[in-house]
Image (cartoon, rainbow, N blue to C red):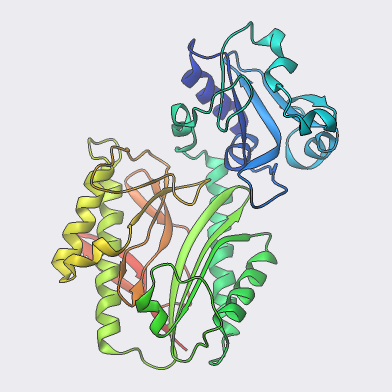
Length: 371
C-alpha cells in the first residue's frame, strides 16, 4: 500500500460515519497527505493555495484555482492519486464554497476541515492523530532531513568568526540550510550573555565573542527537524560544562521515558514527570519552570508539549524533539521511536557526545563544541 493510501485509510477510519469528508488546507496537513507536497505561497499564513478533500469512502480530490491547479498537478502532488477540481480565481477571492464543487460525492453529509471553511467547521483535533505514526517512506525523508540539517549547522560553524553579529550568523545558517532545500522556520542565535538571559533568543546585532547557541527548526517536504548546538571559543568553563551535562541527563531521561511509553499507559504528563525528576536529581529543580521541555513533532514544530495535565500518548514510529534547558545552556535533537529503540536523526559527528546511562540504557547528547 502506498504512503498516500495508508494515510487515506487512516482518515476514512477516523471519519467513520460521522462525517462525509475532510478538507486539508493547512500547509502542514497538505504536506502530510500528499507525501511532501507544498501548497504554500505566503509564508505568513497557515492556509495554502490548494485543498485536498478526502471523502469517507476514500475518494481524493485536489481543489485549487486556475492560477495554481496545474502547478500543483505538475510539481506538488502525484496527479494519479488525486482527482483535480478547479475554479476561477475570481471565486477564490470570494472564498468559494469548495464543498459544493463536489457535492454529489458527499451525499449531503457534513464535511469538516483543518481551518474554517464555508460549510466546513474546523475540527483538526478529531483527526490530527492520523499524522503521528510515520510511514517508512516518511522516516526515510525524515532521516535525510535530519542528516542534512545537522550538516548545514556544522558548515555554519566552520564559518564562524568571533565578532560576527547574531544576525550575520543567522543568515549563514539559513543559507547553508537553504542550499539543501531546507527552510529554517525557527531561527534562534544567542551570543555570550544572551544565552543565559533569554530562552527564545531571536537574533540581534549583538556580536559573538566566546560562547554561542544555535537553534533551528528545519523544514523540508513538510517535515520539521529541530536541533540546538552550543559552541565555545576555547575551553568552556567548568560551571557551563556542569550545566550542559545536567541538561544532557534530562534529555536522556526524556528519551528513555519516551521509549518506555510506547504501548503503555504513560501519557504526556508522565513524560513531564520524568523531566521534573531528572532536573531535581541534577540539582537544578527550578529550571523546569523556565521553559517547556518539547514534545511530539513531525509536520508541526510541536504537535503537543509534555506538561502536568497532558493526556497525549506516545505512538510507535512517532517523532519527538525534546529541548531541556538549564540557564546558559540547552540540549535538543529530533528522534524517532523505533520499536524498543530511539533513533536520533539529527546527530553530528563533529560534536563531542555526552554519554548518559538511564536504567542501564545508554543515550547520547551533543556537548559543547570547542572551536
